[in-house]
Image (cartoon, rainbow, N blue to C red; front, side, top):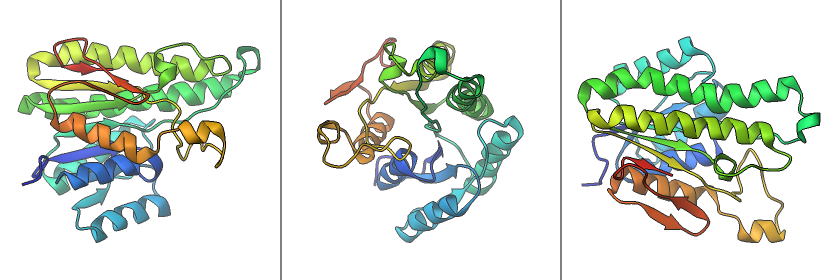
Length: 242
């Protein structure tokens, strides 16, 4: 039996790139999937692709920055798949500019999607996870969530906010036997920020499937790990990873 057989994972930002790679990695461990993303062809194709590979998967279409849509996505997951065990907070975006050139619109977009979107998905999922007294939550951050980054202050602020949100959640949820983890990948060749082929940076970059494998491992393993240029370590007896 696969390690996640019988479990249901909800993955945000799952229609492409890293989110879809994470969904596939969890499916390989036996999980059923609820893919959350804005409605459209990409989401439909992602679900169809997983189904063709033998995975039980549904589209839970939602804009993660809208509370009502996120709540409907969680309810749809429970109604159609019957349970919720794993929450992957992956939806996010990147933009960069010096602080004095960062527009209010850019600031709002980054903080709204990267931080508010994670908060809304977390909040909507917690009643179920708390009631069953178990669950696994993994947030996808970046190097910008650990150190400041020149030319990406707004992005870094959103990821530092995610760190605060999830480390606080880990403390709140430990008594409910819910593990909260954060992964900080950096130098990743993602759909949102592709690295040019043949460049020195690309040669050193991780691919989404490598991060996805680590996330799947976190969902099944009790200990922490450091792999290449991804660092994950516990701050509270293995409850929180970063």
